[in-house]
Amino acid sequence: MEKRKFEKLGIETSLLGFGCMRFPATPDGKIDEPRAEKLLDRAIAAGVNYIDTAYPYHNGDSEPFVGKVLQKYDRNSFYLATKLPVWAIESVDDAKRIFAEQLERLRTDHIDFYLMHAMSKERWDKVKELGIVEFCEQLKAEGKIRYLGFSFHDTYEAFEEVLRGRDWDFCQIQYNYMDTEEQAGDKGYALAEELGIPLVIMEPVKGGSLANFSDDINAKFKAMDKDASIASWAFRWVGSHSNAKVILSGMSNEEQVEDNLKTFSNFKPLDEAEEKMISEIVSDLQSRVQNGCTGCRYCMPCPAGVNIPQNFALWNKYHIYGTYDHVKKAWEKDLKDEEKAKCCVKCGKCEKVCPQHLSIRRDLELAQKDLDSAAAAQE
Image 1 (cartoon, rainbow, N blue to C red):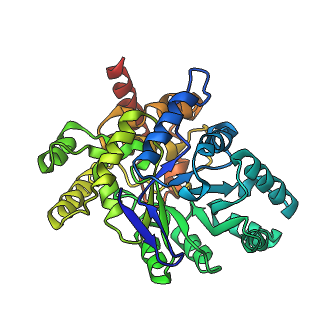
Image 2: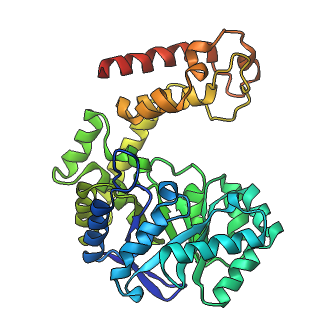
Image 3: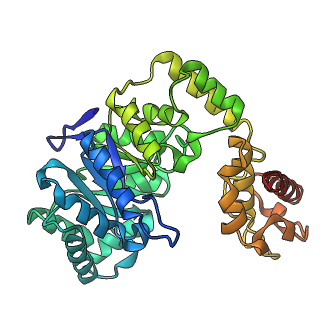
């Protein structure tokens, strides 16, 4: 198993971390515990020693399940990470109560990596105002947490403010070859490296989006290595960055565990030719974007109730990845029928305020047609 040194912390972890938010589930939505336990056991036996969970994962069931499974292992043989749900606290007393509950759920007297969950500019302001940073620092002084960090979802500017806000032990960002300009992105990676702050990486395969493409893109990967999975390239891209100390994978079945163990047990950074290939593929995928909607929401609210940015996000994503599976759930279940492009009354109000000067009315019509056709083709 590939290991990485956290020079700042004087420890070494497995490069592959087990993300405990996508365990296999039973038909009623609960964790399929016997199967999930086998997945964790297999990964740990192969050398994975970083286990990442959080208060809300699996509707609150992830922490208790992980705590139960890890009882069979020496507490010093693994690193346990969990997160403080910043959105659910309004006082230090709330944070104390939740932390005590987390220790109880996880059946431990300390957390190795404790993160302020899903940090943003607004939440950073909140934790400073409420004294939550000082509370976590006190937990660290008491040995109840070993290392203090945060996970992040906001703009680069917000990331820089939070990262420079104190001397963090580590932080966790979303990073993959398609999202180098999103959230913290390349600039955030470089800043963390410059400041000597080790990174834990989430979404290396972009929620599964980088595990399968249209046949022509898949063929390009297979031409480089016919035996490598498409997902393995995404992990290798992230792992080729030396300050990526842990790469989290939310493994939900046996195939994913075995494929990841294959990738990380004989880990090979990308060579120059492979980096060039991925760069060319990214350019190809980005050229498939149908319009330049940035999600700025100047067009919202729509008088007819259409969620204009979301319709365009799904339309662009469908064309980028070339498969309907990438947007099926979002289009059929998450986006309400009354928010879909078909509800546009062509009033034109949105086009008057769009900074990108998009032909929104025309594009909404095209988006509805394309996504409906893709859905019908799957029936």
